[in-house]
Length: 453
Image (cartoon, rainbow, N blue to C red; front, top):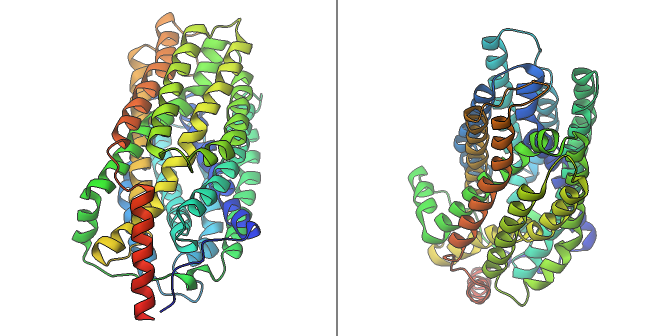
């Protein structure tokens, strides 16, 4: 058996692998930023029904993500346990994204609701078939604590670009006169781009699964359930779930906030660009800070700052304050840059830590659980937002909203995300797999692997 992966990954390989996140992020953020709005203001569903569609899709993710993680760990293929899913899942994933935006407008509510649910279920499945194995490649490619953070930093930068492309262009398209035709053209172009990006990542990581330092340990299904209850795992998953509710509400409510509070649909695209450009630019800074400051403390600092900034935007934003809205979005990106970098960099450590603790190696299951709680959090966010807006009297497609509807949008943009971000950061303080403990665990695993080889 070979020893653990070398700690240094060539930049070309790291960038090629991270490029896959561009394809995943384009689809993810186009869906996250615009799909709820698309269902209400284009397809014609009520806000509550649209939120229910999103919730059902995310509940399905709660089932398929861990199962795909188990499937990936048990897959035997000349293309690797994970790379094979990227190689053969790229095109189905892209196609499932394209058809999301072909729900016929003007049909009956029952038919539109049913079609939306079916298409979301297919998209959720193919996204997981690619996304879970893709994320699980990080602990296989390197065992080094800082190198893993560096890989996640590369991914975060590509994810920021995907945010601008996926979310930004979708928001721009939403302001066009022939919105249905424009959406479909966008979907086809994005679909091709998503497939290519995932295939680039598949090619970049060729051979890396051969470097894994231990064999996968098949265990009964109930053992995977028990893994989710392990203190460090449950803490990290709880943090992710709370954070997903926060970011899910924030992304889904952005077009509503820009249109009805700031008074400009294009403001959503401008603010999104400001947010993501600043967030991507500061990823290297936060990455350097993780080498000298505990990651948990950095997340507490950044999430608390984000909550304060959101409150400020909510108070100051108006139809005469586009500059304040964009400036606030840039500040929010500076704070949230740590959030998009640090928590995902902790997940790969679970693989080695629990191999060290139990002798079992599960490369994909932890990522399946991570994506499960993330998707469930997003589902809850979509449902909560839809019901919240309806309670305040929001009417989809109306040219002019009531004062109550606008107040609901304003509160949904500020209070809900800020509260959940702070709760997520506080929970993360209970996480106990520190740099020192990981260094000790990796060193011991290296000794075990050397003794067996």
